Length: 639
View 1 (tube, rainbow, N blue to C red):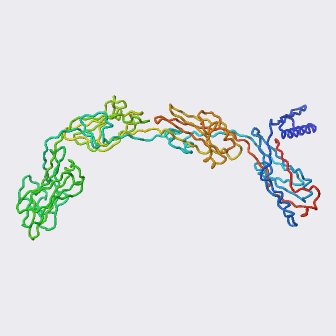
View 2: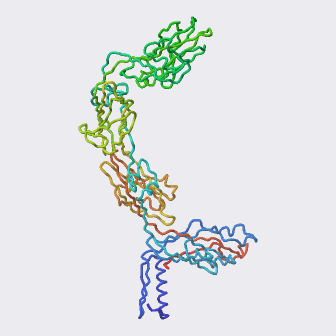
View 3: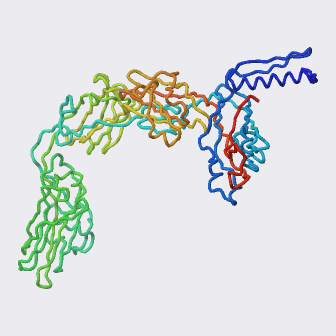
């Protein structure tokens, strides 16, 4: 295009532009072209209004100018307030020139000496200058503002990462198993058998299931007795020994009483005690019927005072038998415990092996007297139990009726697996093929005494089928004892909810929420469905109503569904995803996207100050047709 135009060409171009501006206000759609011999200049006009203007609420109170007129109130500050709301057309992009005119200056000059009003338009280029306002006065009846770069914008809100989803509120959902995806969370449950009945045992042989335990069956032999004698010092050594060399325990350990050849004694009137360790049992096995402790003793005195008693120590506690008055000749005395006095239960062979036995002695009243014991020993009466071997139990399907994602652990508690016995387990999902925890066909897991969890993760089993088999073996004299088993498994929650974080459509404009997209995977019998809610403020979301694409009773179930128009105009939005499943499977949410358009923001022309002075405080002196209320006209044109 040439830079030099003739004056006539310039005048015609300006006229075309002016006509175009007039037509903008009327909503016309025209294009004007002026052709010279050199080039063509085109002026484009939008196909709709550039902007709409309306009277704003909060107008200045001009009645304050004439209220309470007096000589001292004829001058003052211009009342502040809003004049016009300007809303650019949503389809328009570009610059806008805003002009505000004072249309009744003639009437105002009949009342005012001067009237200067400061007009302000936030967002205009002038609002960033110094001063940031334009003056509209009786002498200058137009104020101009420029709005640059007006445009609507297409936007979107996407959530796809672990942190995106965890920014919301998750209920019974999991984002860690598959980072970036949302799944129903899993929880751990278990089925146990404490063997109080046989309801969870499908078959058994050579075992007894009773009182919370499984043991091998046995047959009783003829009751027998094993005698145990002191073999080391115990926790107390207070008596005097004879001979004085050696140890107290070896003065009372003989199989046949040796009388006064070796003994322990007391010459004190207060009680003194010895305890001795005894040898471990060697031949006894089965059920212990009682423990009887013997002492062979005598006293020097003929007094009838109590001189001695049996003493034992078991499981850290001491217990005494009945106090006895010895005779002047050696005699045999005993005290019997049918059960362990510390546990109040039948004696066990480990308690026998840890037992300490001894005596308490004192002299009678006369001085220079003694009481002595020459022999101590323990008799353990027992009934031999001959245990059948092997024995076995096979469970029912312990997970029947459960919804199971994974079978994780097998727990057991075996209170006893004595030497010469074994206890082992294997597992199945069909009650036909059996594996150990490593996946070896027909293999077994050998158990240790106590409790433990055996991981079944290597098997990779899922579903509501699980059987176990336990096998007991023995050399005949003892039995393993199984007290409890548990099968731990994981299931998905059958429902869960993700309430997303609140999203801000940004602090300007009018919001047109458009389309809801999402990526989900829904295995059989699983489902994810969505609803949206919106509000003008973030705080308003908590009480806002959830909507589907057509109302409160439906859901977004297909990606790419148009968003319910009820949300348009709200700045804040939020989605809720409801997950459901059968317990052994989960749907998966990978991402969500909401698209929307931010329409052009509204602008407000306002009076922020200024000053005035009236002709007089007497309105009768004002010229006819006076007015103190300015009248304004606003236009918005393409710049």
